[in-house]
Length: 411
Ligand code: ARG
Image (cartoon, rainbow, N blue to C red):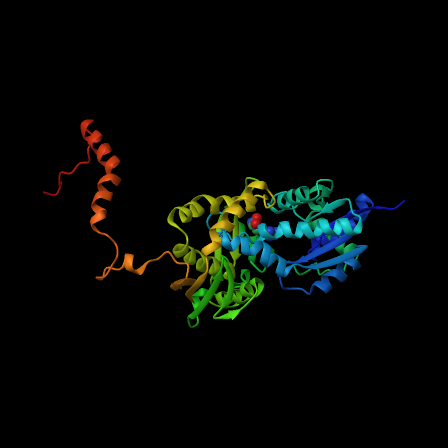
């Protein structure tokens, strides 16, 4: 009888490497290891693939999803200025639905009926994987060896040594790191004490902003909310992000140290570095300031952006509400075309120039010089009506003895 097949989200690290043999033993299954390249850099993915086979996988498959991640996940996040709790550019939250999609495709291709991931029971990523699997293929089962089959860290290390698995278990990395082209997330270790400052070795995408080099001026061209060129050189979204990671990273831009609210109710300390994402969001916001109509801009900033970010963080990438908000954002980006100039230096990207054919800024209305077209006389009547309710409320306060105290106490 043929064995049941499981598709495993494989990172190449200790836990998922051991999980291959562990699931084979405990569940009597065949394991297909799938790695998805979202631009994480680091180890060569062919080396990772071979390791999965050496650890006992029947098939190992590496998907190059870098452009897909940049185009279909990072660009919507940029157009929405997606920042969870106002700060975190959703690095891991964006990649999980894409990784899930490639895992589900592999499951169909290799005839697997169950999905597996290496998450613990404490984080957001388990929820993102499993909700994504459900929304893409409701018929598939899911198992987490660490959470459901008691594969704890010490068990993993002992198992790897006993079975002579081709993974270096001695070199203990104190952090849990997840990275892709949109940024890098670092947690656990000594950072769990909220009073401990991150040490230099925590960072990899950014140089220390305290030792700033010479300022770097950059011009980013956008078309409908998508960056299409840097300093006049046309680029794909992936190339734009990579180039901005390099240049903004060299200026120490995009370091974030925060306590965030996880979906499972835990508050946790997180360090992120996302130089390209933060610099691009800064530029994109600046272009929206001159191209979006006031009410549309306010509604997007106050309602749509935080809600979209919460939904993406909370594993709702494929949900109807998130898709509806995508349609809203899409409509708003029609005129977000133009150029933003920024100076990047010492940890900050500061916008100092903007231009757009679709701008709503009207020099003749804004100028204080002569020759303006604004009808100042009309302001008087506008204010009389606009201030009506303030006048009524103030008069009522006076009637009830609650008027604003105007006696000058120092006289
Ligand atoms: N806290 C972040 C999030 O939920 C980052 C998670 C990173 N994952 C990891 N295994 N280190 O999106």
